[in-house]
Length: 224
Image 1 (cartoon, rainbow, N blue to C red):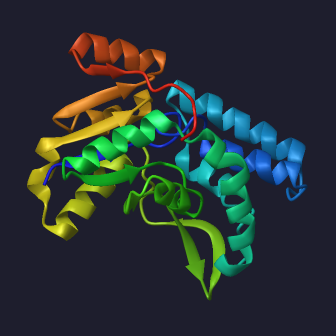
Image 2 (image 1 turned 90 degrees about the horizontal axis):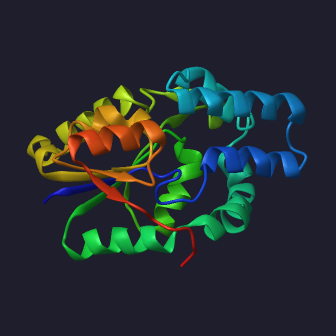
């Protein structure tokens, strides 16, 4: 069974889910220092676009709000976030793309550098069962504010995917797979698959895709 791999932010989703989460918390007046938090958030976004983001430091910022809280305490807030900020940004063209692979019997997998607290319910919106994302660490039933294991970012996406494939004994499937992404940060994984697709690509990815003859795809905004 071939794999159909999808990035999330700015690919299936119009916008960045972790930035949308930060803005949501700010608007709800739930950030201890909203000005400083958003300043750091945007600085990390600039580093991401330039390909020099320190993912460990960024995830520490993203998970700061969860620290000391239980999953149950955060559930209703996350549900409101998905309803208010995420569902209006789901790309209907992205849903059609996912469903096209589903009809062909492909195994669907969402692989993202945004933590699973945010992205698990978004994967559910697309009915994608398999999610590979940074996992917030839990200790004694509470979030610690740290990540458990390897973050799914740049080469980390390749490693996390290979670990998943090995656990499923499906190593051979990576050579018969698609990966859809908008970002040059995903070049390590795009280089691994047989059918890389640049979706609404950033300038660096667009340049690479054209040079290598990869498929280019535009997914317009617009909700289901």
